[in-house]
Length: 174
Image 1 (cartoon, one colour):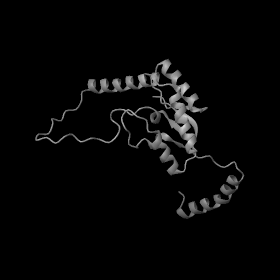
Image 2: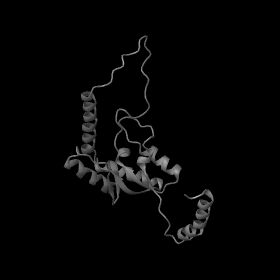
Image 3: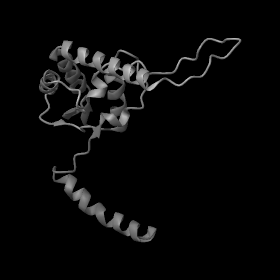
Image 4: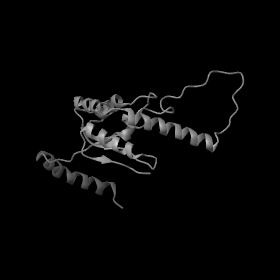
């Protein structure tokens, strides 16, 4: 176990090395995955690129791995919750059946598939332009593939990555 005092000594010892490293121009590149900002409020049916760019600028990030979740329209359950109108009687509380949950997930999945296949690569080129205008580099595009992805959807994500100007396509498969 390292004591606070030993940790402080190690941290102080690294300062000359880190300043020499960054002074040489070969410093450490620090970037952020935009998935880190998944907690930002979303407007259903829209991306949140502008909000993500503002968050990256606030954090001082100069490069990012762009998550497809930020370029795709938000689902129906994103954004602030709207309270139901007041009623004299509360509605009955019933949990959705597994069939209802599965049907809702399938509907969202099919809606996202239609959006992906119908959205031209120019949409992602405009996203790239927004990041360039903000002075933030894109080094990767993250698309989390699952078994429901069709070959056509996979091809489209490669076209999106090309339009974004990235050379790396990252994924967390499920």
